[in-house]
Image 1 (tube, rainbow, N blue to C red):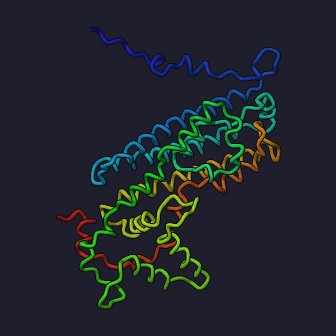
Image 2: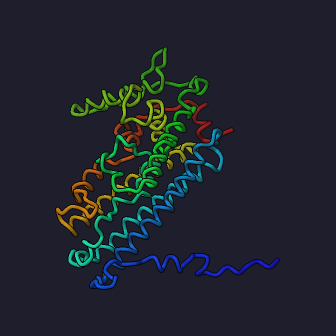
Image 3: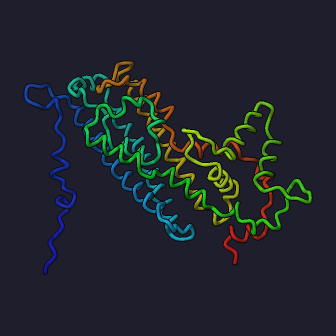
Amino acid sequence: MKNSTVHYGDYLQLDKILGAQQPESFRPGQLPAHDEMLFIIIHQTYELWFKQIQFEVDAVIDTLSKPGLDDNSADLQTVVHRLQRVVTILKVLVQQIDIIETMTPMDFLDFRDMLRPASGFQSWQFKKLEATLGLQFEQRHGQEYYTSQLKENEIATIKEAEKLNSVILLLNTWLERMPFLDNKSLWINYKPVSGGDQPLHFFKEYEQIYITGLADAEKNNEVFFKQIFYDDGPNVNRQLTAKACRNALFILLYRGYPMLELPFQLLESLLAIDSQLGNWRHRHLNMVQRMIGTRIGTGGSSGAGYLKAAMDKHFIFKEIAQLNSFLIDRRKLPALPKELTEKLGYSF
């Protein structure tokens, strides 16, 4: 049987895509606003990229959810690769603001009032993406408002995403099972910097080295260290356990060993996602302030005020970022025992 011929326009369904721009100002009886076409295309492009990012993140979740995820297999490399692709797409989203900023405030006013109550705040895809990455309802700014303008099926989609395993929760599971700190056989010949007949557990010794190096103005970090790396008490703002944080810090400290290279890239990719989301929010805020000043958004939000509060609060992987507060000079790092370095260096 002869295969049907695939045509470029049919494959991409260009008739649907190119026919999907219907400016309100172009309707009969209205005065066409030239820049409304740009406004529509930019936002349609955003939604397409959100779809692609969600596609990549869903694949990452599927891989991290495997009961027998092998860190030495291609799985972890694939996770890192897809997260890095997300970072690259987010950079494009930030750059697209350069295009929309070619529209002046007066150009926007030519059609702005025709959009009410439509608003970017009604992007259910972006809210679902935040939830899938790990932004919890309790962490959101404007909790009473964030789904108020969505359709029922859109709200249901977001609520369902909030119930499922997020990237950060799966990251916690993955970090908790890292075996190096808990495998006593790898620490038999550990030589503590502090000396003595009864070697301290590695992490306890690291704590002492860290605390000794604090400046007087940083002494509160001694308390924070204990809270983050030992305290697993109830905390609604905590998604990474103390054990996961200890293992993540170990990865950051000894990332030069081959076995820890990919785990380090995974953590760095998640931090880069947060960073690019922050960059996008910041650029979006500046654009809104330039376009409408202190006026409310078309959807009824406080406009720039809402965006500023969300930008300050919506950091998903901040628990990874805060670990950098507990790094020490690499020259002071405890020397790892031979049994462990052989594992970390793929020696057999």
